[in-house]
Amino acid sequence: MSAYLPDLIETMVKIAIVLGMNIGFFAPMLAWVERKQSAVMQDRIGANRADIFGFTVIGLFHSLADAIKLIFKEDFIPRGADKLLHTIAPLIAMIPALVTFAVIPFGGHYVLWGHDVNLVIADLDVGILFVLAISSIATYGVVLAGWASNNNWSLLGGLRAAAQMFSYEVTMGLTIIGLVMYYQSLSLVEIVAKQENFFHWGIIWHWPAFILFLACAVAENKRVPFDIPEAESELVAGYFTEYSGMKFVIFWTAEFIEVVTISALCVVMFFGGHQIPFISVQDIVNYLMDFGPNVANLVAAVIGFTVFIVKVVVLIFIQMTIRWTLPRFRYDQIMKLGWKMILPLSLVWILIVGVLILAGIMPTP
Image (cartoon, rainbow, N blue to C red; front, side, top):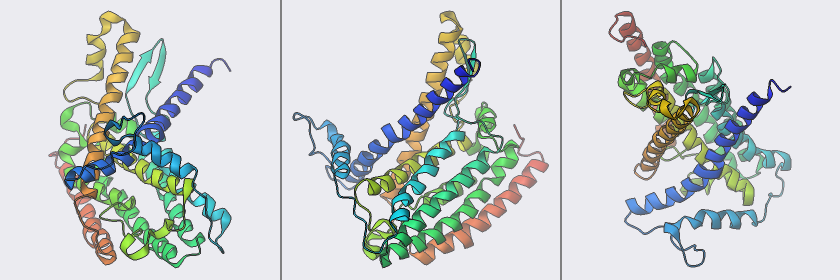
């Protein structure tokens, strides 16, 4: 048992980091960012009323005020609704976004006090397949929420979400096949390791795939301009019309965590993960070796994690900017974009990547 204790502690620490990063930091912060960024883009002040002892801290306390309000709000279940499914649907929608982070590396490989530390919860050889498989489960939470609410608007929202999410899952998987061919691996850890050279970053050779993948991922998350399952002007609030209190918070949190997950996936597949351009992890360790190998590796791990977070924040900013820039697509436009435009383009890109690799024009790392 003692032999496995360090590995158990390491795993628990990494799980705590992922949960703290998503639920403890990003979820409440994104609730504030969404308000504040929209206000800045629309020449408004934004959230700035909630205060503690007169300090507003540019509106940051609004997330805390919202949490307190929603915790004490009534948990309402409509008459005729399926109580069990109505209760578990938000959890089914949120848990996949968190579980997906199990295979996303948020740092590199380090040696701390004689123990090998790999900053990923589970280094799976089929990491990309794991992400696609687990993320698809969230669809069931949305569909069940719409059906179990015994509300026509909720049901319509659930049906729209089902069609949209299932459609874009297919396309999203195809957009990164060229990337898999290039790196010759399904492991996200190995893909990040092969991006140690800046010129092997996914965005250098596969920028069309990045654009297609990001569009599909935003549609999968049902964010503007793909928010037709909610469509307040048509369906009140879509599939979560009949949700209140903590269940509503869980749906809200799931959406924000998915924003972080999308950003993290883009970072590890296209932007080198924790890698710094032209500076390797070993370079950092060697530079700090005068302070001892443990301190050098620890500082390198902190730097790598910080670089990863900064890249994720940039991708989140891009998604938020899209959210407050583009108008909502019609339902038929969303389906046409997925099946008639992005899907054929992804297949064409797979063909182009295959030809370039065979011709030696796109050298694999």
